[in-house]
Length: 411
Ligand SMILES: Cc1ncc(COP(=O)(O)O)c(C=O)c1O
Image (cartoon, rainbow, N blue to C red):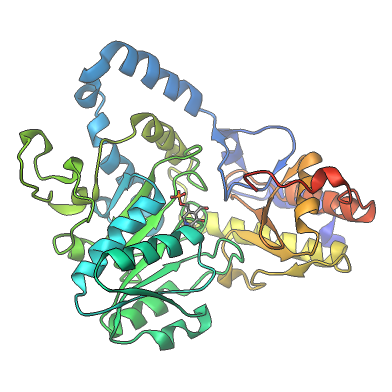
């Protein structure tokens, strides 16, 4: 196992074409492997926000909507996300939260498929996807949410399915679904498909149009580094935009918001999926987050994330193989996103003991230790050290401390 030495990790870093991008971030001491929950702080975000707050808001006040194009943020930022997901610039818009965008697109899809009663998803999909789908199913006609294991999903798509709702990279296992094949299967039965790209965008190459996808949503605060609670994005394929309507018919999605008409008339194109006033400060932070991915080929991001994940799996196999960890993510790179999870019956206190030693991953109930490999700033040496600390926490039973058993509100 000579290639699993620290020297080797450093050689890998030296050969990594994305290594210089780490300078685009402010990173604390320690090893941060949680960029799939909250991306790191870009170096330019604080000064950009100070400019928006002090000059644009403080001095230019209301004029900033036009002068600094605050009003154009949703489209402008959407167009920057588009190349990361294989979309055209006018097919993506930034707005609201992922949950709210799910609601808008599920509602729009249900209305576009009258007479079909089923929204199909997989059990264990991210909770907000399931909760919003369940609520929307009740609200938009007498529909129901049905869940079928990912492996059986294609066979379960029938003529009653209005919408297939899936997360491209599973938040817990990191399993990456075959977007092209599942999308084709949905279309074959006349169903629409909505992909949640929260754990993909910015780390895993996605080709929405190449797969002929209909709809998508995704987070701004994970691999897009937009900051806590950053605005989310949504995608509607050009061919569907004029056919769909958002159930949240707010004024920003109106054809002429400043005509102040009583009657709602949806804007042409993607703008109809806006609802209310953009959150300007959140958008300004997201804009800096998007700058960190500027000019970076999504395929290169995925290649690095995959290599880091594969390296972690090999190190864990070699160093912690007898420590009670069970790999819960696909071993094959092409079937995995940018994070890796292991099941362990002491995953929670182990995770806390790691955090106490500066190795930040996260715990996902009931028993997963999850490590994210954000390709813009994670080094192979970080992975090597993280596994070194995991080994030590296991060998010394450092996790076996009552202080590590109290669960915080956010895990
Ligand atoms: C797959 C997926 N969808 C959605 C969300 C979050 O949605 P929201 O930003 O509305 O809280 C997450 C957060 O981790 C997620 O993993």
